[in-house]
Length: 118
Length: 120
Image 1 (cartoon, rainbow over the protein chains, first blue to last red):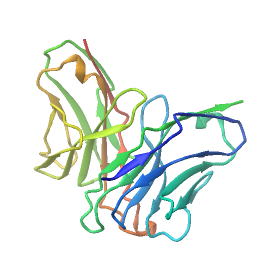
Image 2: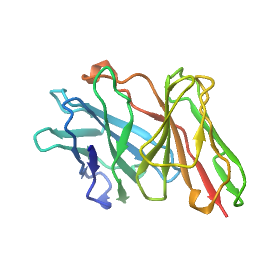
Image 3: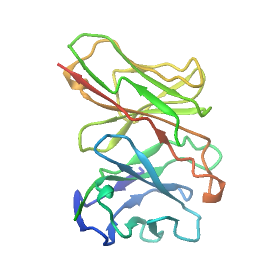
Image 4: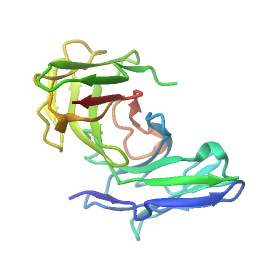
């Protein structure tokens, strides 16, 4: 069964420093996609970054990068130069299903609450 | 920017009432989803749809029902609300899966702002 594990319930980081949020996953499907979402206290889910299982390079989007280690089945999110507005809940998610017939459903981890301190 | 809207944002209702949570998207996406999220917890898929007249149960059992009569509209209904239904309900939509390479499109889910339901 597919599963996403986020072992850090909460993290603190000083403003302007970098922080890594951990995510490990389990799947027997060779084709999958990994996502990170941010959920501020207002409740909406904001898409941050995506990594496909066959992508050769780690994904980057502005201050966000994804440290993809396929053999270890980990997809950690790195936020550089943290800002106060980064304080939020962060969810790692995986798309299940095969290419071409994918349901495109996402399964989510339990999340990590990040607090950025001034 | 995502164009997916949920109403109401907040609803407080008594036990036994019928409620409908509305979800609409203007992106022409075929796939739509309802997730349930308790405070501080992960999201659980309760319903999804591949297109008009298609609805499927998600991974988490739910007493709610959904319908998909129009592409843009995916309402969720609870016939008789109970305190155990108190939760946040998030609607989402997506294009077809992005496939293997990120350059083909990610297939990410676009979420609405959520509907926070409290049943007294």
